Image (cartoon, rainbow, N blue to C red; front, side):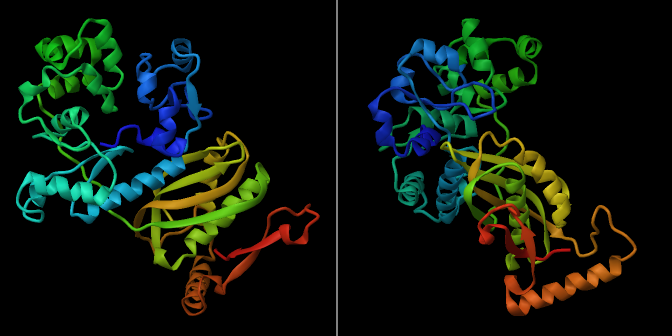
Length: 386
């Protein structure tokens, strides 16, 4: 566990958090809830997920830090990559918290838990709270009470009974239960475990059943992620772009991404669209296609709708592949016609040209800003795709 990871990245370092109470501001266009909070803000009773108005009422001098989802994603990817480098199969649902099964790593790192802890500290090269336990939730409870120089262990479920119900906020499925349980006078996981299971199901539904299982030390199996390669295209915009100019920039990024050699004919299943805003901060949106795509027109149709949610003009745009799909050589465009065979032959010819001359072997002219007084800004060359 790396406490306050998102807040530290957005603020530019943990040293900034020592200057006073601070909290991560809500993302533009999203619900007005604060994100991670500093230790000084916690002293005022502010916690992640609290409404912005209530947080400012408790601490009028609370400093709001602009969110940086793109920077956080990049920094966390480096952390997870460092853990995978020591052999760990990592599950990570949120930046700042990673879990893995340590049983398969014992023989790689001295045959003991201490060797694994030392390997983790050496890979991260930063202060981290490390906890261990028979389940994910037990390890989480141990990490919360651990110190940066000494790991903690929760060996059995009965050791959870003294822990606060606030631990449920670390799980997306049970995060909303913490405040409700606190208002009902249920302060610890032991109090929660003593409640009848049927009563929790009647009051809270499936999240209540999951919370009851967690309080008894039962948890769902780990689901480690599959490490994949990174394929990304970025574009620095000459001026703050919005509207049609931003759409042209997105079209250029899609064409460049599909023309990369590393794609090797594979389709795209999930992509991440990011932007650096002119007013400061970043914006990030994950897009999962209904089916694996390799058609530029259909990708632009989906991504343009997401780009319309951009809260402010952008000065940089980025498109990266999160998950590839299977090769789809026989796939056809949404509005294909009788010339499918001819188009397939042209695609194969373009592929062979690029294999010899590189990605810039087949280009087309894309009008970016036809009304610009600067000739260089009117049009750009982009990879040619059918």
